[in-house]
Image 1: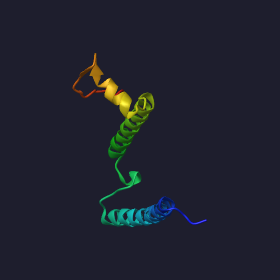
Image 2 (image 1 turned 180 degrees about the vertical axis):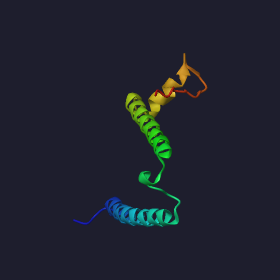
Image 3 (image 1 turned 90 degrees about the vertical axis):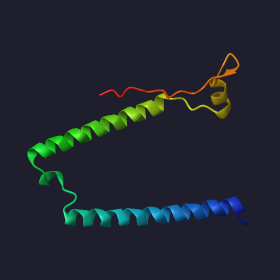
Length: 106
């Protein structure tokens, strides 16, 4: 049975995606190695104890921020487009959307 146009396109895109992932990873590895040789990037062992503490503290902060983002994403329900439109109306009137600022908990 011949493939439909959509199936052909899906397979073609998947093949391109798989090919790009391998090439991109190799390209990034080479770039990283070149930056290390040039001395632009240092391993944690090459830093002074004070710099090591600062770097590890920054990693800790970044990881906590990442965890908080994941928790927020899980907590937010996924709304359909009709639900979004309804949520923007109060008593049948259109309400302007405002940014909601969520606190970052450390």
